[in-house]
Length: 459
Ligand code: URP
Ligand code: ZN
Ligand code: ZN
Image (cartoon, rainbow, N blue to C red; front, side):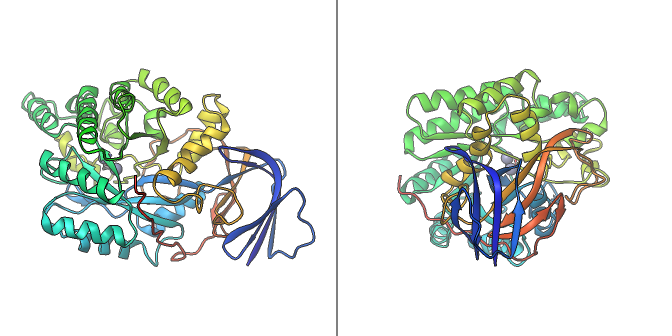
């Protein structure tokens, strides 16, 4: 199996140049100005197009038992959507219930993806309970190829952990060289605010925001910074939504905490009015909630200057027809999540690169390379180098189109970005040297996606 991509403009965080790329079997074997005298099974003319390393989404939920239901995508529908949108690798959260056995959860999540996914994948291991038995399993799971944990400071009674458990999880992570990704919201404050709002008869989706205002998230980030400082652990704040929360992470970094920040495409382009004024707003209920519009410019700037390291999706699809309706009379029962796995790259390119908010090399860095580096996939992924996996996105910046649930690949009856214009789209997407999407159509192979084992870094 060989593939030759000719005349594209290669863009990575460090370089930008026109060259040909030759891929044999699953890897890139040559990058030169003119590669002519080779026989290739497929030749792609990339003249006038960019060639990016395959994009990496470091935060998705596919198999997700949550709030009394299950997220809608399967690994087939999710990987198809990812690939059409240019994402060639995703990192899924393993989210066991507190009573579940961690090793069984690891096997369950792996079993759901293996043999199904068309793109490569790995996991963050959810630490939703910490005791001697769980600790034993976490050590074993790291040996089996996961080098990142996920903890929740929110969702008390479900995934949330106590401070004692948080301290133990961070201490273990430091010892093993594992990075800890964290959902930062103060769980007790959320519960108290939810009770207060419901007692006042405030039941609609617009009150979700008031149960989790910025200060609740900022407190969560501050809390994590304190524990990371005390343990020396390396931490990563997922779905950071607002200036107040970002400032806590920046302050932590300034005093030496090893912290990286993730934000989501949703927070850059949607705001809290999208979760109002009637029950339609339930489509856009997620946690932390969509924020006041003024935060968008703050997050764009932070992405541009690197204080926010990565752009992810936190893809968590629940349909409007049945699942979001579970919260018809009580916003606390609306399954949380705004899916965007398919649309992240195109929206980010359109509003970031074309919108002159993000330099194209930083675009690649924040949507691909940074995640590869932080989570132990670089330079196999997130790079265009001889020896890297041939995960490539030949991107057409002249494409014009509109996002719609009528045409998207995700298994969902709505799209929060319905009607949004996109200026650019992947023309060809390859996974380890094989074309998996062509001109907006999935042409990949379900089950070909590989589980990516990662080594811990000994920080
Ligand atoms: O609302 C969200 N973010 N849903 C998915 C679960 C999580 O908190 O990441
Ligand atoms: Zn979360
Ligand atoms: Zn999440």
